[in-house]
Image 1 (tube, helix red, strand yellow):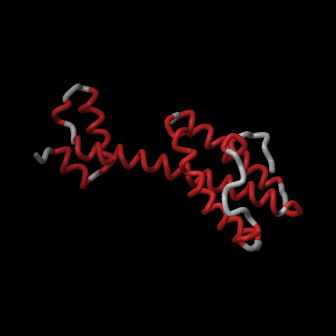
Image 2 (cartoon, helix red, strand yellow; image 1 turned 180 degrees about the vertical axis):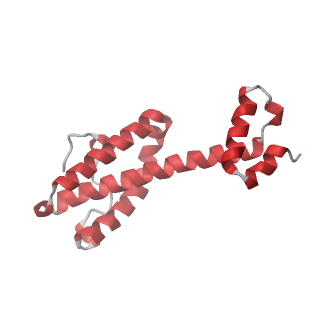
Image 3 (cartoon, helix red, strand yellow; image 1 turned 45 degrees about the vertical axis):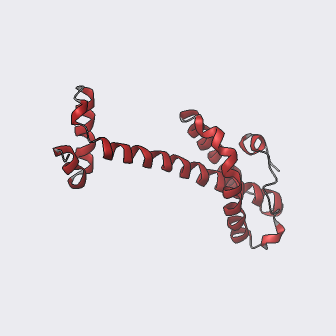
Length: 146
């Protein structure tokens, strides 16, 4: 059944959001655009996972750069490690269930990190381990530097 809120979804996303919020707050649940709300909630979940992988990728790339290019270490690299660890900690605090998924994403993030480190350092791919050399706890530990 097409409702006014369903039509609004295609016309004005922000207005659709605020209208659904009001409908929910007033308890008029039969008026909500349930299908589109479900789609948006699913998309939000996917964005959280993508952010997790993205931040983990940057963190791992900088750990590789730190370890395999010691003569180029900089305050900027250390700051990137600090920022990415902090953002990951915040993400995991907001969504603790992502912690269980983090281990599953290390291989994907590491593969991307290895390519990034190769590109940024100029070192050949085989200069870096084929598999992630860092344990998850070490990766997230603010004091860990390889």
